[in-house]
Image (cartoon, rainbow, N blue to C red; front, top):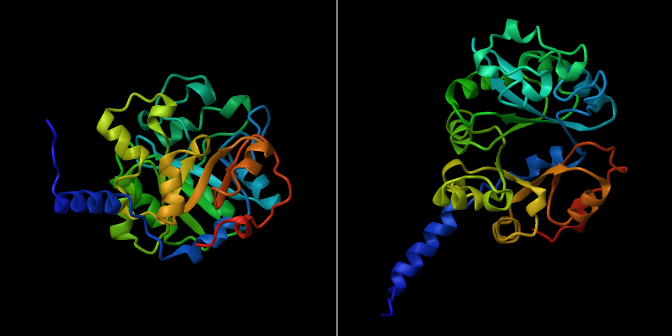
Length: 285
């Protein structure tokens, strides 16, 4: 049996799909602050020494070396925004406890990767940065988002420098769209099937293709660079003309390969060659 879909239905479905992926493209000029220099993933860190990831020394080192900074923020049990990536302390401190189950004071008893460094408060990191370099702030909001967004926004309202926020959570981006519309926001994304993530099929496709862009209207998409040649990235870059950030570049070869697909480069585990304005190599947009 052949099923015929009327023309108007087809057009409506295509329009719905187009709008679902539609990012914000009217503020591209403001993204230049993050395109002018490489962005050090969790600071310019070395987990074998005294500059572990997401620590004050790693952030200061990144600033001194002329890099921007990417960092992660989540809440403690007593509601303090702290800069830390993992949901628990297993990898960084060898302790089987979750960040959300610890008070900020309790966290200060744990050392990062065997160093003398502890988990810093977000407020302290902002005081250290003090507008000296652009910040990309990932909100770890997959579980809850409102309190984290409110507290981070209150701190960022007083921050003197360039920054943007990003998150895997469209709800967090939607909160900023509504309550801090002037703040640049980015949707973090990856290819869920390619990574082998156990995501329900419908949710997997929606997140892989960034189909909630129409809700949160991100200014850029931060996509897993391992999937730079997949259909979602090609569509976002060339069809929607969206600003794209690459996470996470692990060596110079990867950096060179991904120059044409991305505008912003978040790197880790190596020192990149001298910065080149890659935008001259991009197709005109």
